[in-house]
Length: 73
Image (cartoon, rainbow, N blue to C red; front, side):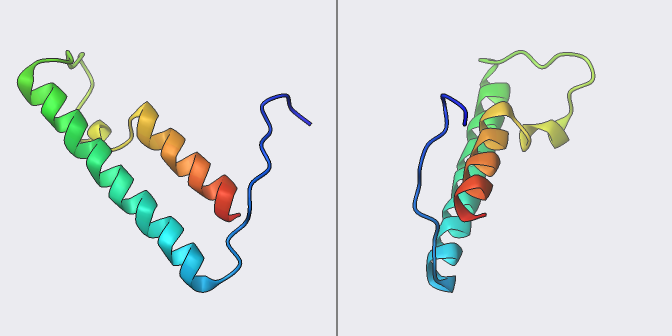
């Protein structure tokens, strides 16, 4: 096993899985809003080729998705 491997409890009921995915949705929404704010305020430079589509799939949002899918399995 990897050095970074963590033992976590897997949600056993539908309600727990629903809560996990709901939390993921809220986190993705907040991450997207934060990225929009950074770009709008000019805090983060948008390079050539980046569009509004990539605001959703940021590194932080991708990590949220991976963490949730690993947890829920």
